[in-house]
Length: 91
Image 1 (cartoon, one colour):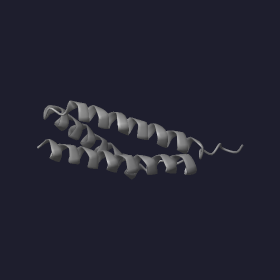
Image 2: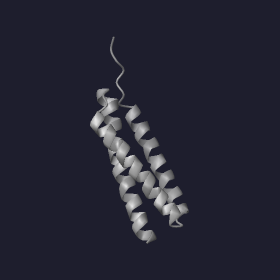
Image 3: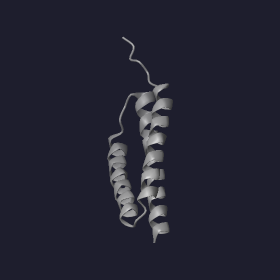
């Protein structure tokens, strides 16, 4: 059972990471937010929370913590890379 919960958590975190990277790149390069993408990102974020909670409730809290920390490092990396692409408005 833990393997299924782990697989679900990894899948949703991977999906969340890819959406987050696209959203951040769009925002950095074009200075826009794609509202539909942001809404989808929020829904997937909720799924990620549920998947991590399911892992914790199944007695796999260490894995859930590790995965959450890994996702945080990933978002930090995306932020560092996309910060290089941010366009400063020309006046």
